[in-house]
Length: 67
Image 1 (cartoon, rainbow, N blue to C red):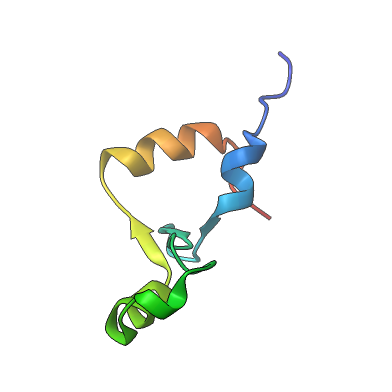
Image 2 (image 1 turned 180 degrees about the horizontal axis):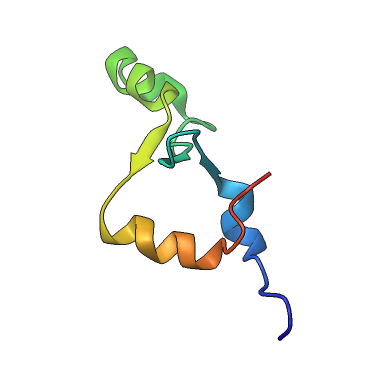
């Protein structure tokens, strides 16, 4: 049976933690920061955690996890 392929787009955007959670970087911190509140940008600093059905769907695209 051939090897399963990792979806490289997902692999670049998501990290798997030691406990198996999926972390991603939040959008909106690249430019136009002056118009965004400090509270909003502070919340965007922390990584987001993916849960539920989305997690199952993304793990299917990462058959071997991430190194």
